[in-house]
Length: 426
Image 1 (tube, helix red, strand yellow):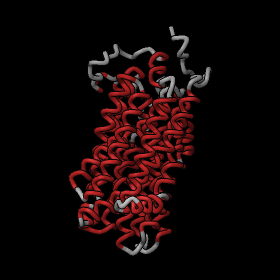
Image 2 (cartoon, one colour; image 1 turned 90 degrees about the vertical axis):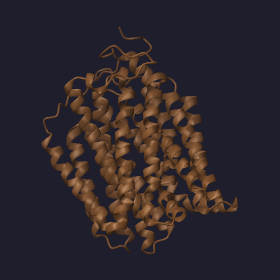
Image 3 (spheres, helix red, strand yellow; image 1 turned 120 degrees about the horizontal axis):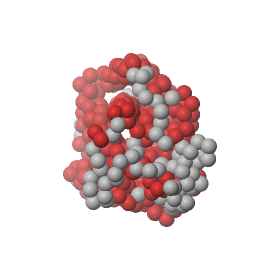
Image 4 (tube, one colour; image 1 turned 60 degrees about the vertical axis):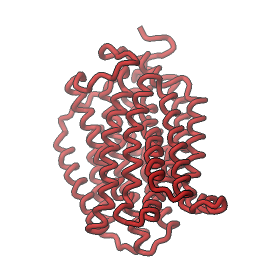
């Protein structure tokens, strides 16, 4: 029998009564953490190029904080599995604040080892920004999961747009404090992550994952908190196929997006564009990544997970091709390519996230979701690291051309997977 404090989530009874409060809190924290995430991404490559003195190594920051995010995703996923979303997300945001401070210290002392450590810890904290989307779906009915995920991602837009736009102001603040100008965005990230941690700990009550477990009978005996999560092989074959497909969609979206986004500011700087213009382009890209969420959520719930994923691959390919043909001096054309890149990423990420959530039983959901994000982030780290090498060896055209080929291949594969089971898990 379902607990009276945790009514079941069914199509005819609507959403769980706590869902609106949960989404409201997540919206607030995503605005804050989105600013922290975008600020660091905007200047990461420029900071590495300045401190390491090499364009070929400009992709190192992206690789480092993506590797850190992969480690963070595993740790935060396990923390959520044991204690719930509230402690897990709070821990992640706190780690992001510590990492941001370490990066500021590294720039002040011109310490490359400390910079690498700070980027790793900062990256671990940014995993909370993405894992929060799963919290939005914990109490959602299967018919509204896509829109629940998209609501959380959409909220990130405000912070994601504001973060790059504040690069100049935070740089002025850093210089006023006798710190290097490029450390300014990480000062913003510190304050934003601390605020997100406080809001999560204070207001994410009741815990959505805990309520979801009470509302859904376990698919199999759940592990004790001291035991590791069951291996994925114990899931039914249909669920494994759906989870693998969702993970693959997110991997493609992350790799293509990270690689092109990371090197665009460097490409623009090499052709005479200032950091303000590059920041505006990245801000538009980050806005498109999240502002397109309502469209993605609607398509996922109305037209299906796989058709939306295939559309996302098509848009990613179009973005890569546009960046390939864009004149280096044309900021508007590059901005248009980055906007398309953000939309394609969102279509793939929302559809992939929903497929993974469909397949994961509530009693083991957080652990599986964390493991999926580890794979996604490791792939993203590889893309970020390879992006600098590709640009150094063959120019921006080699990077964007490679992205277009990957997206085209993924489109063909997704269209060939039309027989994937579609029935979502309750």
